[in-house]
Length: 627
Image 1 (tube, rainbow, N blue to C red):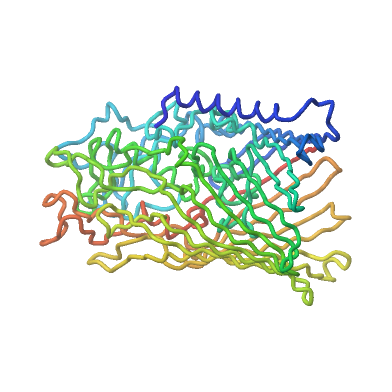
Image 2: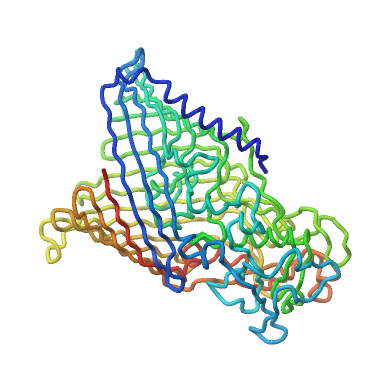
């Protein structure tokens, strides 16, 4: 948790760094070349069952100035990208995403019949419960209600209004956006309106090699594939912008980084060889998963976090909890998420990476190593909480009470691309082994465990003529398959179902891009599909780009999801933390899950980002005017 003074200190640091980069270069009179451009973009998205889901207006300015040789340095240049946006959906559709969002809710109480409900605050009263005067039944939704029925599982209320309107569930320093943070996302204490700002300079060494440096706020792109982040993990990603469907260039979150390349050029063995050091010295920043109440909340995770923090701070009614079928009223400090431990700035909390990259004939390759903090949150149990039956505060086995952490990860990997001239095809491969990642695990008494993970992507790009469609221009076909394997996997059968790690031990996702051109490349339709094999979910994105003029581009598109959607897994209702009060069977040991399952909260890991967006089909229109 950052104090206001700490936030101001880091804001001022960012301003001073930006000013410092501007002062590194000599007077403008020495400039050799200056470029300036930008664009205005308007996006209107309409979502099935909701209506308006995006009404964003963006202004982006880009500029660079080349200074040539400055003292011992050559190719000195300064570049910047500045972006500001206003998303009117929070004003125009305020009943779904603004200050009028949410309503009073009821929670399923299946002891009275599947689908039967009781109003929030009228569940089974535990000895230490909550007061609706402090936690009123308003401005909420039922967790997961837009994706699936409760269907005998766990659910609870989630506030959805901006945090300056309703502060319930807003985790300090992590998911605590107010209305202006939502509408004007770039104008915040991290200075996101400075999209990029860096200085480049080269130092020619006596041996003919070059030391090439870029210092400032930037994106550092490792790897050779799209969409899947195997090696490309240096910058966090803003998934709240458009889930996984925007170009990574637009949704990576630039960081203050020092990147230095030692360029050796051709050697006796290689056609080109380069060594790179990357030091991300910025204050840690996780992925933006979306705050509950935004149109895009990947995996619906932000809603789970906000609802769980609300349970910790205020208590609340949980559907079908006691006996596995009775809506139950918990008090504050008993279950939920207590806080997020956001790493403060220190030298040990910075991130360092090394890369060797080379070219040998038609083969390009890299070897990569990175020490960084996970940009995804890990929920760790084992925090002190109140026993709802006795009032005693202690650490209870398998209790669904958590703090959020971002563990340290070590990544080792590499990539290759090969151009096969005989078949005019480019093949791409990436692979990475990471250690230190953490996963939810209902077998472990702390409800998480650590595992090594192997990830890889294999892809191919080829231009193919389809004469009956276009006899003068080839179509681009680009396909890839992404694999993930959790190497220290735990899952086992229990009396009422499976328990352990909800993620799939082995999973694959495949994508295919088909893109064509007509009218002298002014009309370009494309099809993008992605299929998650274990989740059995597919997304199909269609788009047509029309260059109306050299400055105006119009893009119309649609995004559809197909497949199984939400899935069930052990929800820890039968974990028996407060023995004997929560024992489910005779002889049921403390801290032992029987495996009773529901959609929430663990099923999201089996559904994946596509399956958890199954009810988010959209029509999309984008206008971009460049200048």
